[in-house]
Image (cartoon, rainbow, N blue to C red):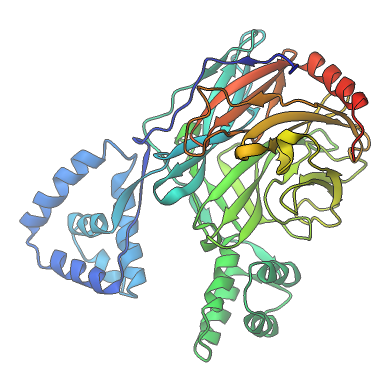
Length: 489
């Protein structure tokens, strides 16, 4: 018999009204034609066109004039036109040009799923037994492009979950590229990204051991004068994978979207696994592993934040930083960072590192054993520390590609040793959950323990999100009991 769980009567659905205003560009020929047409309008015609647009879309975006001015400048840069021409225009004409290079994008029109959950940095103004949490989601919009979004919620003393409604607006972050790159690590990731050896060798010869984004771009521009190779652009795309993003302090957490930025993310950023990490001095910060995808190549990446306003973004390196399903332990173990991974696509591995962004020597930890996981297993978020051991929520894929959630337990001091494991699924999609974008799937990217229960947010058939709880003591006891009954092959 399966261990009893409680499904919460909560369903968080995708909302097609959640939109951002993005740059829209259909090539130089059409762009030149549009700008010429707007230039030929009288001031009265410009006013009659732009004023109704501002009245309508200012209700949908926090600062639509700022967005339109920015996109007008982007269009001029794409055409290599002199930006001083824009400065000489009237404000309304500049905004109208920007409007022709802007489109709305519905960030979660297709799906809102694969959540992870962490404690909110701010725990003030609460009643006894309450806890404030942040939930991250994978939002999928037009073109199946994934991004990371957030909601705030409150857990009461009975573990009821009250999700705060989302705000009116959605805002992208300011992007800052001020990294200093190490040539050795940079070109290791270039090889992983399938950039040609000729280009890597050429860049290697021209770059110093340490360089910044400006130096890199100058060298690429100089080399382009003598060499034509599309992979030179890929080098810049790779550099774009290292950046910082800053959100305005006047945004609610539900207003913030981490949208694909670099070309290596252009098909989406998937399945962020957030974890509250505590260092040896007791200081906390939040990390999230996620998967960047360009349509061909998967790049594991790492987010870092202390406040959910400012984030650092960087790729992960090493033979263990392959494929999907990387999940960081919430503290160091025996002086080293620890990470779960799935480098071969169907087994769970564990690895240790002195540096949080370099992962080598993955060791096999778990393999599919039960019929409901024969196809593959993987983690469903960062391990959770309990007195009995590290609690792992996992997923298994079985017949008819049905996804189930399950659980296992690892030794606290040596998590390479499994000391408990359920021999039945913890959660299987029921008749109300199995229909969706991808049928028969339940999936999570991170859970939390509160008031003696494990709270698991989970995606329903790659479409929406719900929650379940299970008693922690009962779960730990069952995992140990089930482990003792099974001999693994």
